[in-house]
Amino acid sequence: MPVAADRIFPGEISTITLFQGGQGSQLKDYSAIIDKRVLELPKVDLHRHLEGSIRLETMVEVVREASLPLPEDIESLRRLVQVVDGDPKEPALFLSKFTNIRLFFHSPEIIQRITVEAVEDAARDQVRYLELRFTPAALAQSGVFDMEDVTRWVIDAAAEAASAHGIEVGLIVSVNRHESLEIAEEAARIAVDHIHNGIVGLDLAGDEVEFPAQPFQSILASAKQAGLGLTIHAGEWTGAENVRHAILELGADRIGHGIRILDDPQVVSLARARGIPFEVSIDSNYLTGGIPSLSAHPLPQMIQAGLQTVLTTDDPSIFGTTLSLEYQHAVDHLGLSLESLKGFVLTAVQAAFLDPLRISQLESEFVSLLWRS
Image 1 (cartoon, rainbow, N blue to C red):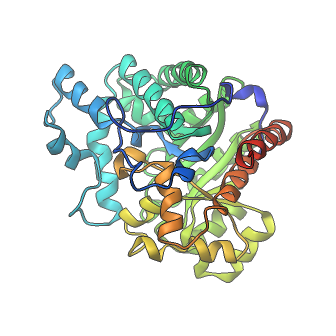
Image 2: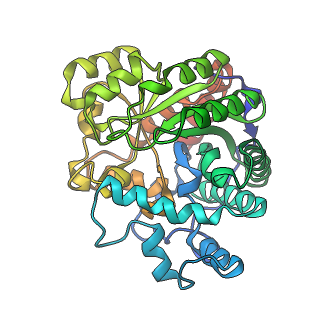
């Protein structure tokens, strides 16, 4: 469901220095393996988790300064907070990384710092519009902080970073399937309370294998009725039935991942008829065991089936990726053309949790940027 344009942080869209990695960035310098045209492409990222976007260098600093019970050297720490070579490619291993990552949310200053850095890293990768999702319950450390407080810290930091780096940012509140309905209700209430203060959507995330989404139906419905966009993680590790349920029963406006939708042609027809956008993350789907190889990703088949698809990063720090790298994967491993990448950008603009007027304005701006001489 589109929301009003005044609900986002309107950093002016401007020319931004290309992402080069290096000091202060959480990712490797991929410029040598990414086509310059991909690096320069103005982009939109609709599915990026704050908790999965923390710079590894920042984590090392926090471990040392706060005496966290984690290794201080970067390579030892990497294995605990990122998916690395040799790790089993399975959902449980990926989700286990968050046990250590949650240790870092120990102060308002670090929560605001990682928010600023996440926005900055997106801007460096030529992301011009970002929907950054965060989980208040995770940042609040199960009671150490108040979820209302951490939400305000994220809102303030995102606004600061948007202004500083020439990027528009909308925030999405995430709730996890494995957490209580009471936590989900409070997070949704907070999201609605800040619907004119940067929050544009509500996300249902977490382990869809072990925890069904049905108990959250009324919470999601109330949030949607209040004007928030709904994005649901579904069909990431289980079959197309979860995608059908997310659309028909939960009222999803967008689907996170959804790569298993091709298991059921009827669900494909449903999603196509309703124009449901799918937030696809190639590296994430490979490294968490959703696909056996990058070249096996079903994105081309999803496009051929007439589904609306956008490329996203999911958890860029955990997977060691950037949006430019995701785009390059689509070219190198899936046979998509460089020109076709522009379609992902425009589809993402159209799928943003914004009101129709702002979407139209962004479309015009991106068309000018994408096809300028």
